[in-house]
Amino acid sequence: MQVTKKSQLTGVTRTIDIPNLTEDQVNAWMSGTLIQKAMPHISEDHREFLMTGITPAEWDQVFGDED
Image (cartoon, rainbow, N blue to C red; front, side, top):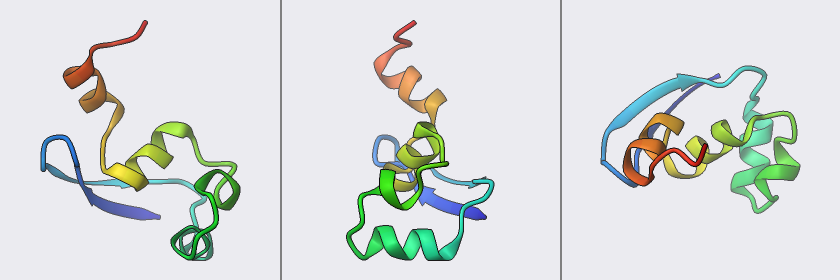
């Protein structure tokens, strides 16, 4: 599923493809189900993007790479 979000850090709007994400899962999350329960197979990075619009590269650029 293609998802477009505006980053809460930079204001940049990006569209990414999140494989195997369904509208039913998004609707469950939007209706109050915890994102981890609504989309257990989606990566943490993709869930972060859904919630905040922040990509891993953007996170590293702003906060530094934890590795």
